[in-house]
Every structure is written in structure tokens, then in C-alpha cells.
Image (cartoon, rainbow, N blue to C red; front, side, top):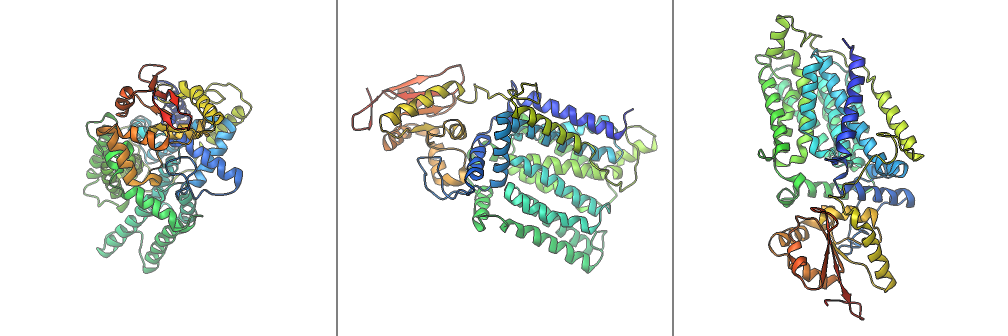
Length: 522
């Protein structure tokens, strides 16, 4: 039988291999199917090369010069460095190591509380598949990891495993989190809810980790300090305005898939519900023991996930951490204990968390892989050339045509203009930087009015594309197979359709241009 250090190392390498084998190559490619992966690296390159942060848009021709800030600027700088070292291979390697480390650590929490490795593997697997759809190489991964770490600190504090002074680490971590991703708001909310719960328990005379007025002042001060770190960013309150728009927009849940409510008919969303059922069952099975405050927090994240599925991974990690902590108090764990089952071995109500022995190995894997990629060594998994862009998803087949169009337009003294789907904006920003985009997925830049006009026209008035074509002098259109705008370009005179493979992206090109520089149909 393996000892715990060996188990967690085996788990780390297994998860790392599975993530790289299943999310980077056919058929899923999840690490590389989000357009933000591409434009985030471009923004980071601009910041690191010029030493200046962006304050206006420079990527689109529709909103060029409008106010826009790089709200995830620090994560974008990290992504730019990874891309500079290993290109796409560097990004996916870092994402795989980060996620493998996170879920190895989660599994270790179950092992520390006495659960056998087999049911631990099942629970970790469910946690992963309930979050799988959001495994993109982009800054949101930082929020999944940092919320899990924050929640674990609160769990350990309420259980008496760590002292008050360890919670002070939350303040610098939140300051870092502010500049990595807007999920810091969720961390602050979680911290505030836990402190409110502790206060309520104390008022009712129930056990809580705030045994004195001094303890209460400490945790309240901690919440305030962590919340104030939201202002420790180069954009000041402008950053908060962006966060509040993205979290409060009524348009995004209606049209953007990652913002949509949880859908029980969706296969991926059903795994969130399965994990939720297991969590609720385990919470109820702690009766008659009074639940700790931290055990109830995943219910809040389950509600948020039901409203916007992008919160599903945040529910998943908080639910797993809570289930590990409540494990010794459940009826079924006590039943296994009474029968001497090897599936549960009691370790006491508050086991001390051991040091993360796998962390050094994870850093070694990441550093070794980046070194191989920097020297263009084609080593499977670790080296260069492993990551692929799915041509059925991204317009890689049309890249030469796009670049040729830009060159010909500039040679003729005209500004290149393209009408593109939101999905392809990030790809164009990365791989055809001389071609300004019509739109991309920076929703805070375009705002609800323009986004609604674009998305509603796609569904009910595709001829609107023709009006934009004439307004901006557009000569190309790049759309996915399922776009409603294809109905216009397929029937409009003067447009040629090019599609390299079935179900792949479609490129439309206008055939002629007048001497005055305005587009005309043949």
C-alpha cells in the first residue's frame, strides 16, 4: 500500500498527464478554445515591452480609442512571459501544472481526514468534471486556485488547525489577486460571509472561532483590509467599475455561454448537480452535529453557479474542501469506523495539514518543460510543438488569406477591415495584429447596447451586417459555421465563400473595390 507522499505524487503526475493528453490534443482542445488566451498575451506583451498600461482600445476599428483598461494586467504579463518562452506550449503546460497541483492538493485534504484513496479519487474526479468546461488557459484559473486556498485557510482556522496570525497572509494574497483577476470579489464575499456566520454563531452561543471581542475585531479588520486591496491596482476605482459591470450585466447571462444559468439538460452542467447532490447529502449526514459555518458556504456558490455557470468551478472547489473537513463527522464515516472498514481511518477531528510535498515536483516539471520549449526541443508533453490549435475551431486554414488581404489593402492605400464573429476576435488580435477587429470578447469595452445589437441582429436581422459593411468599408468576413450572419453573406451579391473543411470557419471576401476606395459589388 502506498504511503500518503507517494499517493499524492502519483496523483499529480496522473492528473497532469490526463490534462495534457485530453485538453490539448484532439478531440477536446479545451485549453485552447477560448479567444481570451490569445489577446491576453498580446496585452501582456504590450505592457512588458513598453512599460505602460493600456487605457484605450487599440485592437478594434469600431471602438478604437474608446476607454478600456487591462483589468487582468498582472496575469497578462505572466501569460506574455510564458508565451515568449514556449508559445502555446508554455501556456498549456503552465495551465496543466496549475490545475494538476490544485486537484492533487484537494485530494490530499480527503486523505488527511482518513478517506481511502479510491473514494478520494472518485470525489476528485467529480470535482474536475464539474469544472472541466472552464479549463481554459487564461487568468480565470488564478481565481479558482486562490479561492480554494482562501477557503482552506478559513476552514483550518475554524477547525483550530491554524492560528490567527496565519490569516494575515490573506491580505497580501488578496492584493495580488486584485491584479490577476476580478474573482477577487468572490474571495472577499466568501471571507465576509464566513465572518458574518461566525458572528451569528457567537451571538447564539454556538461554537465559533471568535471567542472574544478581540478575536471579533481581528476578523472584521481582516475583511476590511482584504476588501480595500481592491484599490491596490494601477487603475484605481476604474477597475471596480469593470468588475461590477461584468458581474451585474443582464445581457451577458442571456447571450454569452459562460455567463448563462446552469442548465440541467446540459451534459457538462449535470456534473455540477451530481457534485451538489453529494455535497448536500454529506452535509445532512453530519446530523446531529451542528454544521460549521464554512460547511455552509458552498451553498452560496451553488446559487451563484445556478445563475451563471462560470461559477461552477468555484462551487466545486469549495464543496470539495467542505466535504473533506466534515468527513469525520458524517454518519456514514462513523458507520465505516464502527465496522473497521479500510475506506475510512479516523485521524482525529482536526488533523494538521502536512507540507505540500508535490509542490517541488510541480515546479520542477514546469521549469523543465519551459526550458525544453525555450530551446525548441520537440519532447512529447513537455517540449515544443505539443499544443495544437484545432483548425475546425480556429481559422488557421485562412491565416495566409488574412495576411495577404492586409498586405494588398495597405499596398492599395486602404485600411483593412473585417467583419468577424466575437469568437475570432482574440485569434485575429494575436495572429493578424495588423487587421483591426470588428468585435471580440472584451464585453466591458463594447457594452450592453452594442453587444445586444450585434447578437440580436445575428439571430433575427443578419442584413445588419450589410449596413456595417457599407458603413466601415469592410472587405472580409470571418464567421463560424453556425453564425446567423452566414445567411446574409451567402446571399449578398459580390461575396465569395471560402471554407477549407466541413464545419470549419468560413471566410467571405468581397470581390471588387472602386477607384475611390469604397467597396462595390461586381
